[in-house]
Length: 490
Image 1 (cartoon, one colour):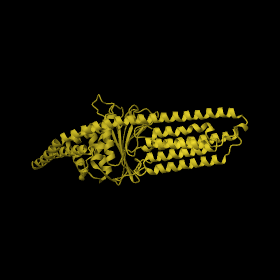
Image 2: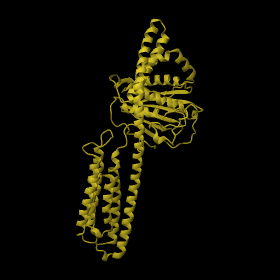
Image 3: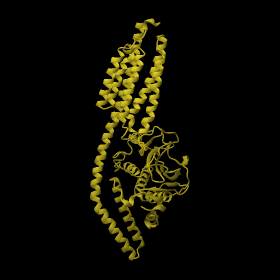
Image 4: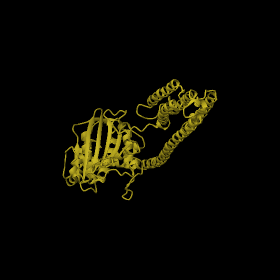
């Protein structure tokens, strides 16, 4: 729906009559008056859900866990080295300090290397440096570093020698079979070499050799149990995420089949409606009926929009649906007025549009996202004592933020983590299908935009669409909360 069609729709008597009866009182102030809000003044737990945009990187499955576990191991090495020096005065510190420093430096290097291996847009690792190669190299380095530390601290007589088996368990959980075999063979070689290491001089220790051995066994086995327990819990959580993702993919596949069949069945009647409405426009103008011509143009525009939506959902972007320059401020204001009038919204509508904003957008996708967000806002405020919707268009550097805020009850914590998934709704009895936000997130992805939903602390919800003014790609979530996830709440 372009700006010209919106203007003509606004001037039509039926729409104009609905607007005069629905949009009272008008308020064009930029702020939200807490005194007018029906929401309780008490602060609420802020919920924020990222529906589209840069996803959390998948490399954390193996690489980040290894890096985090290694920092824990470094802390343990420092603690045991300090304690070992006090318990065994003859323990040599120099090679152990060198080993700990080398492990810490390698961990810092791995952190930066793994991050550089990701695509600039925050996606999957590149094909040249897959994540499993990083994990394999890290595990091999860990076995060698562990063997170094054990060689200078008693060899296999050191109670912490049991941690050599920990690397085999890690590789079995995180890496392919070939990597596990490699780590296992390297561990066996390290064990063979460590049999020649010089034992610790425990007999000269103040506490006595036997007591130190028992203490070392207790500490090492406890540490190993904690490490393995933590890792198994985290990995089980990851498996649960993968299971949920598999279920999500099944629903998406079902939805794809439904959209494919629907688009096939609707393409012919939509084309017929479009052609007939264009002919009706010509006939109406020939007979001098401008009102009928405007209504026919509206029918033609809606038929074309329906065709565009179906095509976008199927991933088909026609040549006339490429990115195009658009004055967003006027477009959003006009669309909000017409769409809320069509929905019968009778509350207060406010705009925060400081100045005109020009951007390159995919117009059909942007239109559908805004229509869905406005429909959600109107429905959310239907039962509120004070109905208010605020629409803002703000330019922030090379980005533009389009926000739709309402005075409704806010996000439902029970389904906040599943927002944006198909068939997720609390309004099934009212006929809701749970596809509005899913379609919006899909359309936002087509525009390389970021779409997020959040609860406002003073009450209500806010949907924000962030897109680049030049229509390009690149990171746009620098100021998003660090805990914000694709399928979680912050």
